[in-house]
Length: 450
Image 1 (cartoon, one colour):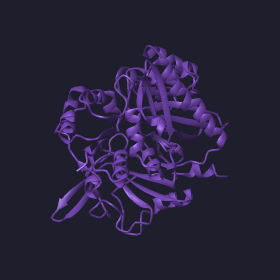
Image 2: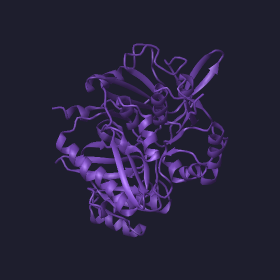
Image 3: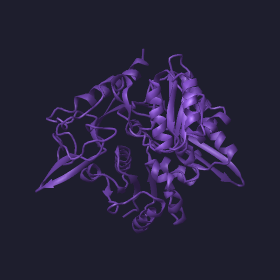
Image 4: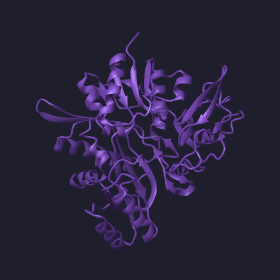
């Protein structure tokens, strides 16, 4: 049997990577994966040891597993695996890996560093301030009259942005980050507030490496997508890891060209100029304001979640060649990526999400494979935080995380894809007690057609 492809991670992003690669004919193993992958048969899941803590020394377990299965390629999904140096350790053992090494992961792992990088390289980003201490931070927020976005410098699972409306909210957020070390602290990155019309995710395969004593770079753009970060409709409520997404979004050619030239290409050129080797998915998170100006709010150095779900579902090109070419330095030999239909995903999340989601709640209406019993054409369930409990020959599904399920759909029309994701099939799917979801996923994207 051919050597498998290994996907590292357990969420909806990794489910979709496994699904796409499985449909291309590859055997997939997932560490740790999730029960939805296993039941649907798209990946063999390999659990992590009990009480596993994600620290650099624990990546030895990852090396032991991959040495056993000898995958042809390892694809790392979550940012925390990159930040602790999993790629470094796997490459030392001779494995082919898609993802950034620990040193280069600073582009995502430090918002203070990445803001400085964007300023140095002429990449449009909000004005910012990186204070040295708590008193300086409070003073800056007062001076800006609360028109700021407060961000912990480090990784915060997409939940580390606070837009304060009162001085009390601002000081509490700064204290939590800088004194208590929460939400990506103790350093803080304070950006000027952007009056956002809509968000834009511009992911691309990027390969920047040293060749013949000089640096060279290539990229291949993925379809642009739109995430919805806030928990509630109309972008209200706390920031989350993502409540839904649509792709591709219909931006005009002028804006598309500017994003490519001023963001993607300047970032690649900046990496080359500063000697930053990067092989993976570059994901600048952009905001377009009400005057049509755009800004990079932050960088991610991996596939986004839930953007990956809709982008890969819309991708007509095969995925594996781009993953492998990025890892091996041959990305420049591949054609531009081709897109098929529009896709939409609506995430169903547990009560208490994003801070303290309830787990163990029964999920009603899924079949033994974790799918809708009577799906509409072009519709499937993406598993992010579920658990399959065997009761005889039957499976009972329960919640096992904050983002539990995503209802994903595709269609030649974006409006129809969005509608399908809300219909949830034609069966008896009722989800779980207290489920939360947004009712306006895709609303802003549809306005771009007018």
